[in-house]
Length: 344
Image (cartoon, rainbow, N blue to C red):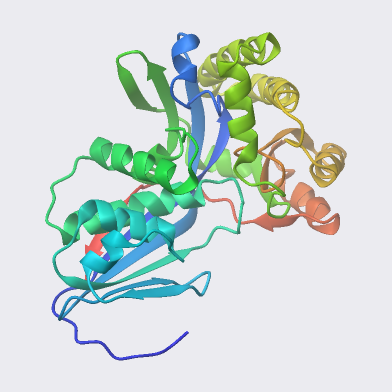
């Protein structure tokens, strides 16, 4: 990557947002699937694995896009050139720039602590951070919900398939969330679970990038819309599991949470081929022999991260066993706060 000096014209904006681990009700958050399952909700919690967007205003009209974690970079002489472009090395930043249409030149730098294809919503978190930074840069006064809508819609443009809503709420709010998917809109409820309880009972491990990242949810979506009765019944049960798990979390009934997590994973892996892998199955098996109670793949599956619920006091033992058998254990700390925007 080239190192160059630029003529800076103002304060730098820095926006950071956390990733998430999902517990129940995933994929049903894709519109309009949840409309066919009244009472649907999604449960997840924010993890302190951060994405960052930094915007530095530049004199002149040049727009420089740079990804620190992937080493990619792209230059445009002006916004007009970027607006007319059809292919991008950094489509996430480019599409958002097209939407916000800044009048001044800028250097936009993004970074992510999430591994590639981890299934912990690294791209959605970065969409929120970049949306917030560009909103400030263009002097737009956006509510959190407006940021969610923009980020979700633009991400759908980037990946060319429908996007679910659940990934944006942990990035915005942090903590543990119940995301209610209703006909009158989407409503986020904070779940009163101590962050320390989550941290002592869960292990997060990365199994490698999926072979077909982003495909599994789309295949399930199409099957549902096409009237696949098996998939519809599975989602009816997944919605019921999520509602029941929500109440179990509020009560602190971890045995019930474990039972429901096992049931959710059993159903989810039958929705489409490729949701689980040999390594995922192997790690779940080895975890169960060392104090694991339940586990499921994060996101669409097919690789990425797996979240393990373990016996109290067994997290270290389970993490060691996972690391010894091909998994990469990631630090699991609940992000108490969501989106943060600062100026330097």
